[in-house]
Image 1 (cartoon, rainbow over the protein chains, first blue to last red):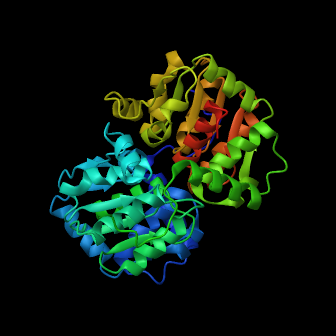
Image 2 (image 1 turned 90 degrees about the vertical axis):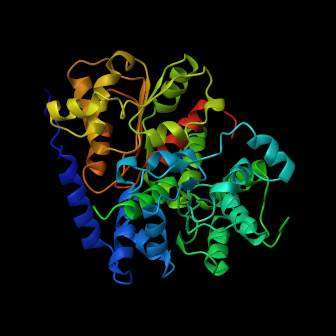
Image 3 (image 1 turned 30 degrees about the horizontal axis):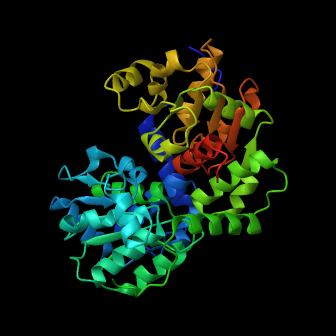
Length: 210
Length: 210
């Protein structure tokens, strides 16, 4: 076999070196030990040590999210990329990973409500939202709609991973989540975010193993 | 319905405003008009206008990748997140989107070859690689292995989206692709990259519509 290129082939070694580099180069001092593990895995997913400055967890977030997963709560995701980023073997209770974006009813619902398909897809979460772990890794409209649904009386999830990305509404939707105060949250402030960071947060919460 | 939060609800308007913001704030002057559309969509996927400085396309990349898609070439992805980020309705020829990472044979192959599962999964691409569009959005080992396979005589793909992310091998694997010279490429230099950027590049190549 060609060995023209010299690189590390062993998965566990790649993870260990990556996490060591992140811990050497990132400013993680303001996190608790439990929060730090989530932050490290999120940084690993995007290759940016400076992300540490934009990550914020409510004090109750890690415990609430971990407890929900241990109890078998479903993980409700706004995009299929988030859902497919979850490492099933790390989940503590064979938790269901749900994304309703491609359900056939969603386009009609979006037209009826007057919103995006990403936001309309949350209507199909209603009977599973109570105590769930919610992960928004794509659409600011989905995060805004989630807060509206709770406002309107929907049962709140146990915790919200609020990491939509982009230039219209992303920063504002995460500010709204932080100020909402009724649900434990983990966010990436500003425009940055995305499905890889959201999935990384889930994977870190799911297991103590790095 | 609660309208406590004031935000834009209409998908097309969100896209248009996002792309306008990106074009106003990014330095895109070194790209051709065709390359610029790919770069804009990649920036949209990560929320970072400064990504423009890290994007590099070989001069033949856009034409080669577009031509392959038009002719019905499959899209071979190293991760399920990339595969699930591809908007099927944008594809010009109902192109197959393939990820072999979770095929049952892969763990044994990885042990046999002595590499990661992400790299070993490429063995199952061999009969589809000729003229394909390859998208590496996760694992540096997969990009290195791809170059090794071509070195060993595998039929090269039409173009390679080389955007693995991370702290061990990512920058080096993309440098290797750039220096390889035998296959048109689009890369994000350094540690940055990821499945969302790779999928955004595919979605931009797939259709002229923004």
